[in-house]
Image 1 (cartoon, rainbow over the protein chains, first blue to last red):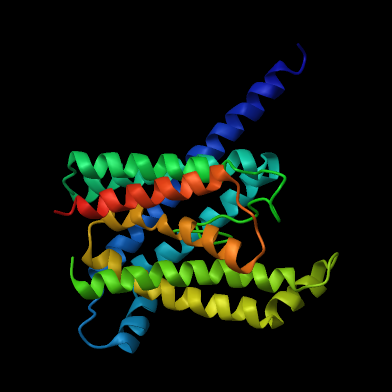
Image 2 (image 1 turned 135 degrees about the vertical axis):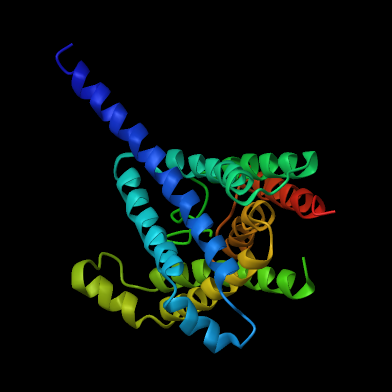
Length: 150
Length: 121
């Protein structure tokens, strides 16, 4: 019984870590979306790059991307990749919610079903950590790092 | 969504898969048990790792363009296609033998991406 508070504190930290991860990963997509919508791409690729590097929201996007990598590392420190990786499928749903709330995108049934099928597919794919393959999924996509996604 | 946008979306996914595959190839070619500064020196001098990183840089710009011109609720979820690409390159170039479950997941992601793309109407 003595370690009960300790356990619940560890659980709270784990849940907090996941919430932070989902928020940071979703915010990264949102920042990149804002960035892409802000940049003027009419004057060539090189100009686009120099412009991107001097636009705050782009730098915020990259900072979030890196922060997501760090949070992911702290999650992997305590949880097996085989258990953590499938959970990243949640980000597809949270990004969808962000698109509706922040960018007022209208969803139809096909799109919602499609995103759910993708999320299930990612969870199924990522949960395969079988012994008969070369090296069990030792990287994560979507979140390029390290990841991915994206 | 314009043809150029779809093309750059495809480029983004291809470069992501290329990057992942190249990182893995580069790391597989390093000596086992290397750690610390020697590991990072190996990473920084591996042509595969550097090539993958260069691909990532181009990918970031391409992805930003795509996101700026397409609904997030379309291209965000569809970017999961890079998982499918990684299963394929793992099988083709890395000697991995994905089990049925992984192929099933890849199939579901492809199906879902198709539905999301079709939802654009």
